[in-house]
Length: 249
Image (cartoon, rainbow, N blue to C red; front, side, top):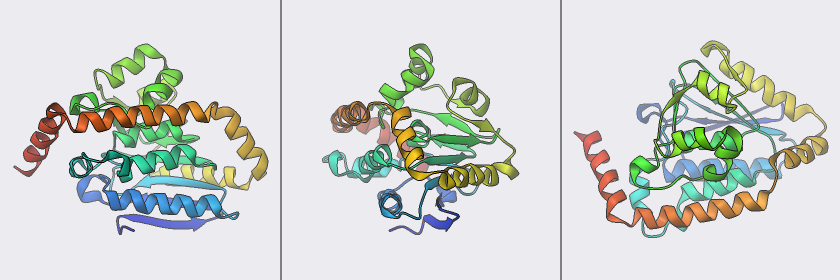
């Protein structure tokens, strides 16, 4: 478990708050494991109808802590980051996200597995995998073109272009852009609304909307294999080490 993941329950909704604001909520292995455990418990709990992800301190998450990439470079299949992606893709109940500030890497791609997502005007998204010498994850190479079209997906995944909340809304990655003071309330209201609807009807409709879950699972594993190979190659290792050295200087 991790002290950087705060959990609370209200009205059938599990709130998972990423709380490492001094590092812009960058995710460590322990944080991933805490979120996985919370999701596993929520999936088994009949009282839980939805989960809500949010960040603290004006950030959603800066993505994976790059030190963890190096730690699991030799055996990426055991990486908590990959386990989290698998768990999120397979989570059976509605997922809502409330995004403020940076949403980088998995902080952006996880929105593809959320049923509803809201952000403030200050939200900034980026999928910098290619710039780090690796490949996309969370089945984003499959889901992003399906959601926004190949041309725009190529901009985001090949050029690693950042984008703001207004563009995310225009592309269909968000359900709304709201004032910072309203973000938590609106996202929670939407999550509660989902949790209180007829459960079996919600779960069945969600499965229909999400399409071929097996195809998504296969793409996650394809990406993971290429990601693992990239981490062991000199190119990605050098880029990541240089980035970490710059951050310490």
